Image (tube, rainbow, N blue to C red; front, top):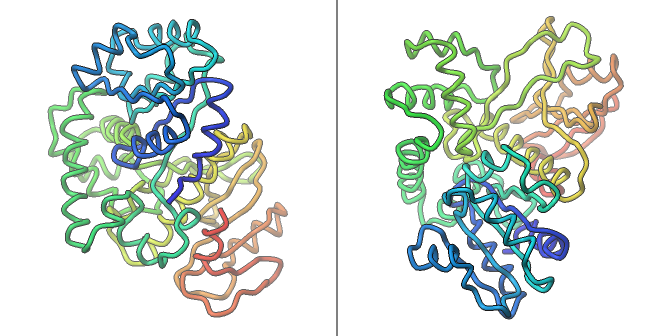
Length: 367
């Protein structure tokens, strides 16, 4: 399997450093080593290794190194200044690839000492556009992280998932906040698993967990930083009476979703669309966002792809309903936004009232 970004990353390495971020165990190290196969004198160094750490500190790689891969470098004090110095003094023949998970993405956003020196690529779980010979149900059940996706059984996938989330919450979370009440954090996570696809009320969750709404908001922000969940905010510009502020929450690992196959299908679509948005930004440099539409009158469409602050495509997810959703017709009539209804179980694709009704798996494979 070749990840979608591989060739673009190789091209970008000729121009600048590349930062490769994403969830833990999503395949960043594997992809970095696959890229290294295209370079005869590559070096992989992980800051977690004491031996590698000394080589990094002393800049002791051989002069003929043509690809330098630095993993977990953000754990180094003053790592951005260090990297700036390495990049500014390196020979033209040496390329630099920096990989890391949540902390690399967060720390990258602070300060500008590396401004103009790198391209960003965000690696997400595999989706139907990358692996087209698996049924959609496999993505909905296993999620797209390599280990559970390829596990021999659902039981092995569930065992991985339990250890993965517990490990993130009890170790990586401390890089962002000192959390004294892990019970409350876990309870927020469990409630989010049950509310996928619905606008999130911080007050409602706070009442269930018996903490403040601000604490709930902070916990969700941490879960975002750890690449466990992502928010889809409402789009309101030029949409009359659109005053609903609450975001919807989805999971990077669809296997974490608690709900029927319709909800898991919606989460799979959300992840595929987010990945498409990231590709447009990271590889093409065009500003995109993933939103949903909802008005005060409770008309709602699950997703809206927005380009340069202009709605480009509305998408509604349905398990088996082949009649076009009234909300799609309404938004299309009022605002002339192209619309599409993705159906999990559909025999025949068609166009109804200028809205495409398509098989979900067929469309997701095109992203």
